[in-house]
Length: 206
Image (cartoon, rainbow, N blue to C red):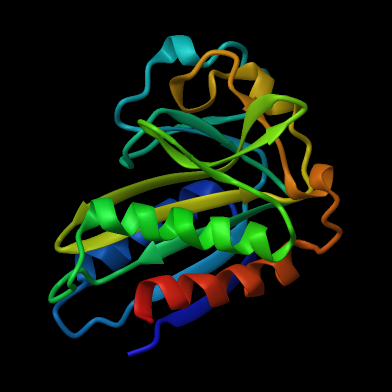
C-alpha cells in the first residue's frame, strides 16, 4: 500500500513532535505508512545520545530534547524535513537497511541534479565534497517504538547555515555543512520535496 503523504508547511517543532508520538502510540498492524513533509522554525533538537557540550552557543534558538537517536542538529526555514511514520510489521528490512535506503534516496536525488554525494563510515547522513572539504547536506535520525518508526530526515536546501556553527553537528566538532543552493540548485523546498518523495518511494516500496 502506498504511503499517505501529508504536507504540513511551516510547523512548530514541539506540537509536531507530540503528534508523531501520538501517531506512533496509536499504530497497529493495519495502520498505513505516512510521510510528513514540512519545515520548522529555527530549533535545535538534541537526541538521546546528546551531550550538552555539543551545544556551543544556542543564543536565542530553543533547544528541544527529544527521543530520536543521535546528537544535536538544527532545523530552520529553507530546510526540507520528512518524517517517516512507517509500520515495520511484516517488512522485509530492518532499521539499519531503512537508514541506508533513506541515504540512497538523497544520493539518488542529488545525482538527478548532477551532484556527487555519498556516505561517511559511522556517520549517518549524506555528504558532499566542496573545495576539498567533506560537508554534510542531509541528516537522518529515527526512533522505533511499537513496531513503527518516527522522526526522519532533513535536507538543507536554501537556508541560513549560521546556526550550525553554534553546535557540533551530530556530535562532530567542526563538521562542515552545506546546502543545495550552494551547489547551484535553484529549486525550492516544495519542488525538491516532490523529487525526493519519488526516490524514497522507489527505495522503500519499489
